[in-house]
Image 1 (cartoon, rainbow over the protein chains, first blue to last red):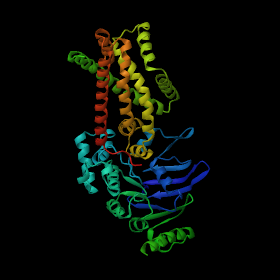
Image 2 (image 1 turned 90 degrees about the vertical axis):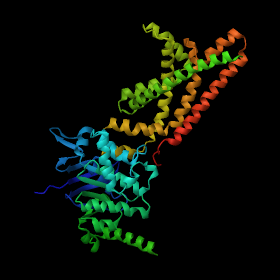
Image 3 (image 1 turned 60 degrees about the vertical axis):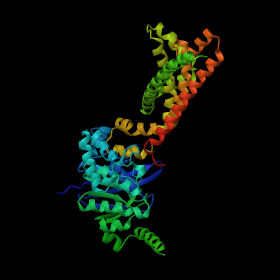
Image 4 (image 1 turned 45 degrees about the horizontal axis):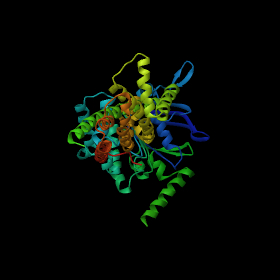
Length: 262
Length: 214
């Protein structure tokens, strides 16, 4: 049996009175790109943050490579994982944020090598060599000694991707990685992500880039009001959308596209 | 006012600079610990740090110095006046710096902590390597302000018997009967020291690498 990279079973979550996720079931297959799309407030970012262990589901289970994330089942029912257990459970997950979240007091090289040195306890030289190799991969070796404030948004996001990759994750989560970027800078980030997908990285991408979802995604998941309404291959989702909400959602994108062309 | 008197004042100002510099650094270290205690989520630690800050901000420094000077011998500790002065100034400035730092720590965007978490940092590691350096940068101007205040407040440590710039000026004016030129010279020396501190701080601030984007 091929085990899923991430398995989500009956996950629900609410913030106060607002239900953000309703009984989500989803398998994220290894080596594939799964894109989460949906209108704002549909719960796609919250679902991704649950996969990262940054949010705790109120009900349901999430397993990463077969191991539970966020909770452990004990004789007295389930309890939250301790900070150390959570760190271990998500040690194979890399995450890229909408706002990049680079540490402003470190250079690009410092950002990529920090966890190697402080968490993995690598000697400085070794950590920086490895970090440099990752920066080369995102074509930013020449900017290694620049601080985030000296880099463009697209460059910052590529550094953030390098920072996540430096820890050798088997799964990469992207939370709207291009939403904070000027339109002309999204391409460079999407290209890096495309190359990563070609290498066979397991990826979950929350995105508004329908084009990316259609061309790179192996699976497209459509969320609306906290429900996973639809998930299938992109050609099935986009070519003949069978769901009225999905159709409506895609229409707004097409409308927006049409407006841009004019 | 002769050159030799001025030289004595200059020598005494070295003591002022020494006591202030040590107190500012020690105070900053204590302030970071106080901040950590307040953010630890432990109620007792939170209350203890709060009490410390309230006391040292609420009681005049002069009274604090006299308290420490008179209290320590009672509990069997006799320290040289230099140590007493440094302890008094450090504890006082720590309370103010902790308040300044609080704003800095609160100004560190949560996303930067989350990215540290995802990179495997423990809470403590994130505090040491991510939160504190960013908070220090955010509060740098306020910390410089506090440093200048401490340089001036150090004139109070003469009450515990330490001969620094102000005490030296008092001694000299008593022996020469020339208070005006002597205190004018002392004031000038304080002014020059603080101008240098302010200038150096401005240079340093410009050289500090980027702050978090708003």
